[in-house]
Image (cartoon, rainbow, N blue to C red; front, side):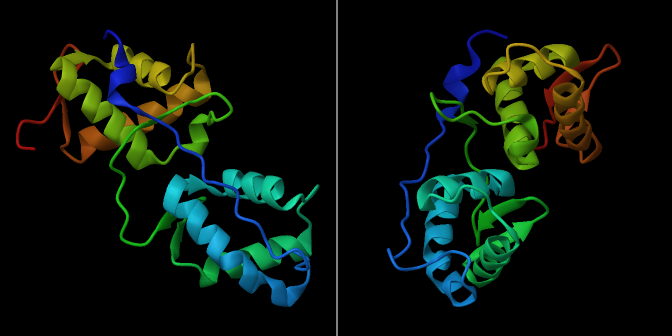
Length: 186
């Protein structure tokens, strides 16, 4: 399907958000100091998988391991933040997925760390660009767009699930020969 990198935008990491020097992340009252850093993180990187949220907070705040108390504080802060938690993803309120974020040096994501809406956008953008393509070709092109040189069972299953949802919802049409295209009524 050609050079698909032009369809995406480099993933932008949030600038580190520090806690006050005296705030211990494990102390119950200090969750309030975590709210704004979480808002800033999600505003820049949302939708963001909770594993990446925890990874960023560990790096920013110099936490070796996120134990029960710190996790409870992070969960309280997420609840207080201006974000929506849907499954394993945090998204800023009223935000929509409007771009495909491609890996950059120091920032690549596993297939389960990419929101389904972002994968769906990648599929639709690829098909709009080329008109129509075979199922396997779309699957491989989406994988390449996210920096995965080859697909395996996990990647195949995740991207296939998104493609199947797009077909079921009428956003994509699949011909008898397995060719996919964006449904014309969009």
